[in-house]
Image (tube, rainbow, N blue to C red; front, side, top):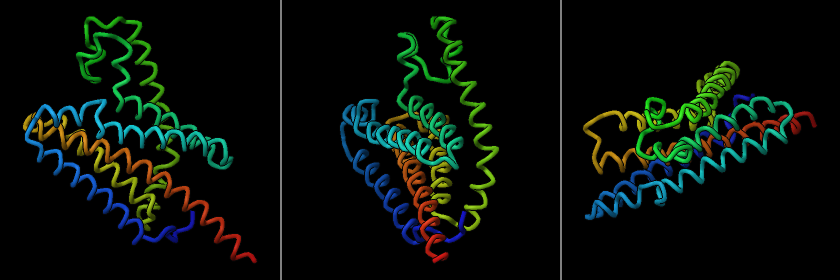
Length: 223
């Protein structure tokens, strides 16, 4: 991959700034609502905050599937990425709730220890999780060096992928810290989760732009 950023680093920083600003404004607007029940309605599964993020991550999944069909050179990587994004999307949409009525009363991390969830259901989800871990290992083994090299030269897609990792880590950290187990903490958690999903989508688009514009530049230099 060419080390010339396409589009420019300035454009990437401006877009990243716009995403972070949108997250901040959304948080400020939500926390300015005096009714805590209304805030919870807006950030719950069917609320606009989560629906926006889920739309972004499912779009990213669709693009990964499309690129897997169109890009022969990177087909294996895109197939692996599409599975990872499918798992990510279903996890963020709390799809495990649909596997059992009892799952609706528990978090994903406590799914396997819930006494009322059938063993067959646990085994089914365990198989999906194990496959996810195998695919993630194979994907990272091949793509992590590419990401680190791209991040060192500050390619836009790598900057957004790094930003996703930071925002996603913060969303998970908030969920684990007791002091944030309140309405304010829930607002920050959901905004970070949705923001991370948009960062994934933008990173994918920027990666594709980098690849395609590199090809155009390479073809032009040979003329």
